[in-house]
Picture 1 (cartoon, rainbow, N blue to C red):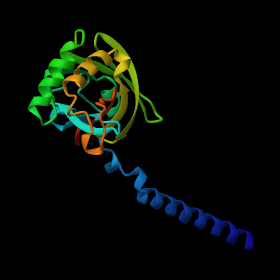
Picture 2: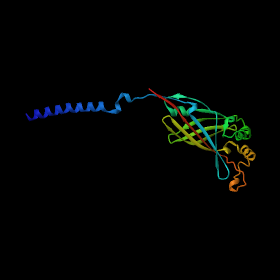
Picture 3: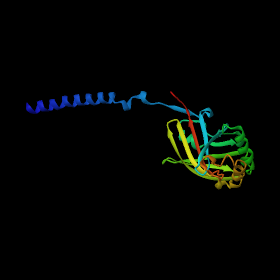
Picture 4: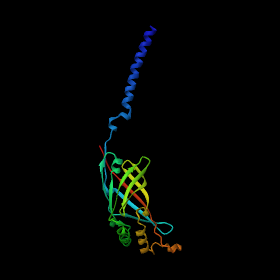
Length: 216
């Protein structure tokens, strides 16, 4: 009799345990079908920001600028933002340089960019976006192609990149010096007692964009 009761108890325990497991599975949020979301990302040129920072004076005072036009080609729509960004190629007309100073814009275009070899456009492409946050970008200027290393962040649909370049890499120091001579007074920190005109070859480049995200 005791053996029969024990077996009966185990039988009912097994039934209730099975019911409890089924209920747990139903309540598990990880298996809810409604959690599956499909998203498509699209590049929108109106949502990108490009900025360069040059430096004057021996104390490296920043001079900010951008270009009013930048053309991007590649996979401009997809489900994986990183794959899209790694396909990007770009073209920047140097005549669209903008520093919020028309006179300075004209000097940079005529005394620097126009003196470079085959540089009506700065062109390039994304070589790789590595898992450690390192970005490799190819830039062509003065008829010279060079890869530059920078840092990037990619958070869902928001991408940001920054790097520092040296114009000597593209053999552009002669043209830079010509621009510096033409702007000697503007590049001399007279207020701090300096008499030396200085325009640094170092340029900081930053780029940001937000992909348009649509999910079903």
